Image 1 (cartoon, rainbow, N blue to C red):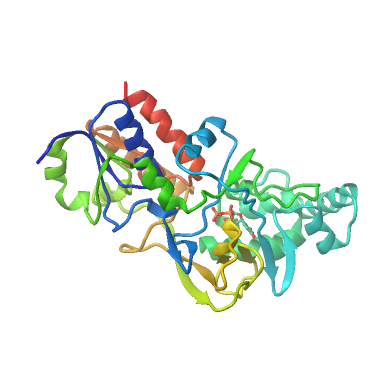
Image 2 (cartoon, protein in one colour; image 1 turned 135 degrees about the vertical axis):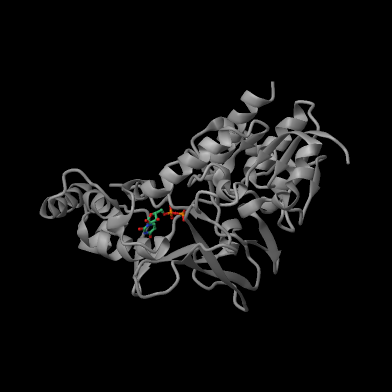
Length: 367
Ligand code: UDP
């Protein structure tokens, strides 16, 4: 077997960026992935001429110009701006929480009126220092919005009551006293035209990639052929779950091709009540302003991860945080191996942050 400087385990964003940079730095590199395709969870697959986000909707957004320019080398990004709509028992609200949302919820017209309404509800709830997601949400937007737009959705997504979830999760969601429906505060946003898979393939251009190849099954053999391993799989699985398993939320998609051009009129509609079993419906064509005659939709169901499922969201609570630190201590003793990415670092990473981190690691490693 040939010998390489770097064996990258996992062809997702972290692995692809690392591999690209390693090659550029004159190193020999090989990428392996146990899935039959590259691109990790940003993988897109063409169905009826529509790029379907197979592992859930991914909307690229960043404040980091370096990262934006970086991905720009591999794809042209369109002007897609995420503005999901919330459906609460058939009542529609604008997201993120903004003047349209407040007007629909309370009939308020000015930012001052909205602010007063939120302040009043916050005061009635008597929260000074939010200790969990419920308290954080109420202190940000008041009880009405919490009850209709946050509580049911969050409990479905995380499978736990909002009182048992960390406050930081909800801080991802902006609250605006303007009529801006842009879900993200980021300076740069868009979808790579032609799909994420093509973008990742370009990153991996000229690099040997072996698919359907499971590192953990033959790790002795792989370790023998590389000086360094960049491992982007789950850190607990690397250690055979020796300290117990880290918890993840998994997601299941029911995808359908519909014989109509427009099912819901938006790429993302969140079902925020507790009764609808799915969290959201994605209509993929709208990420790229598609005009196809058919449409593809995915209903997204959230579930607790169990061995054999795909891990999606790390549950970054205290218990799992402590367990992760124990795994990380073990990882630091693996001199040949570098752990990276959402699964390797057990972190609820956005795409831009994964790339930022990968570039940082490259700067330290590829000298
Ligand atoms: N969230 C909510 N209602 C919504 C959308 C989001 O309460 O309609 C909360 C929920 O707690 C969720 C968090 O905001 O876990 C982050 O949501 P986001 O859509 O940013 O998550 P992702 O797109 O990463 O799944």
